[in-house]
Length: 571
Image (cartoon, rainbow, N blue to C red; front, side, top):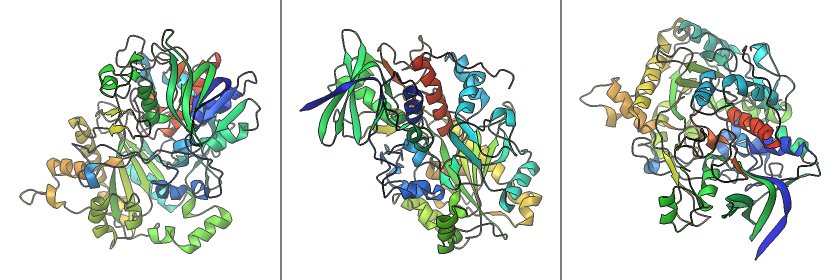
């Protein structure tokens, strides 16, 4: 039996970093009837308290709040991960991945967006997207930032890490290594900084909290949870999207829209829905017996940031995992929402490893004031080989700090494909990590930079030492610390940061590699848009949550036919 719901004006599919923004902005027009379909549950349910705790984010991987997407065995990377593949954690709850990420708020580099515009994405230059970043933001403290680049009246709370002894060490360290203190969301990105995070009064501040719940009482906004969308309904003779099919409470249902269907299901979910709907590479669809609606490169251009865990021991104690997990720390958080559980990271660094590209970092550093122990390293219950290697070191070296080296602008590209035509099957996710040798070369330059830390005056004062020990399978003829060694090391231990993008690539109308145009309309299909990280043509320099919120803001204006704000060309 198929149950047909009443007509709505618009129907966003997904309520994550972009979907929740759309729900709020579109329903602000009382004449627009909006239905949000979310496959996950309600973040306000009784067992959702862990979602609020910033430091608890690794514990959410593999839970009911995670899609638990498996990854295809990698050919060039993750060789010391079980099955040579890392689970692709993605939020499955109101608020999406803004409920399960590490809360880091990074807009990206101005050259990212200027590159989009130069590549045919008209209207997406830095000057044109900056007003949308600022529209959302509510910066709670502007004492350490470029004030003209920030807003203090938006909906999304953005705070900074505590101004403590460790962050002072980090900022001093950066200056000694040629990286100034900077506001990475301001004029210049390269340098070391306090972390700007979507945390408010010690609690995670998701897009559900910022945008969805404040609008939930509007009579024209309807939100349906546990609604798994499986197909976009398209009238073939018109090539027009008119609604979606979805599963809800064990029943197959349909909803029809008067204006548009908007896919905001993320870089994994949105391309999967399009493929199941017959929109994608024709040969691939034919393989699975799916009738072709439109031949488009859906699922191509998949790419993601990678991270490498680089721990340091030190004589000075800033923090330890034992303190993080202590009863006193828990009580402090429960009673006051402060302390070690109230933030995820303490510092951020951005490094341009090529002098030919000043202030266009290709390596990012996530900086923490403790050394991760066995519990955190094994948080997926899959990474046994990875954990075994590091635990042999960190169990005896519990005092120190950590740099996670992130490949900020990867060149490697992969694909997302259907496993079958069964809507319940996971797709085949193949990021093809480190398939481009340029990524390896960039990563090695980042490692060489970190090796200088113990030689700085700041590093010497605290007795900083790199903890990493030689990896037997990478050590040939007793050689160690060569570029070949580090390439081998990277191919064993670099892993995902859960930032998949690009699978419904945005491009000009003549770009044959693009799925959507600069208005985010699916090419050749009327009444269908994609609004999420999947449209990103080239990944932004830094965490992808803030850019996805911006995409939601900009798309809302497009859908409502509003004039875009004046570009901030002077900044």
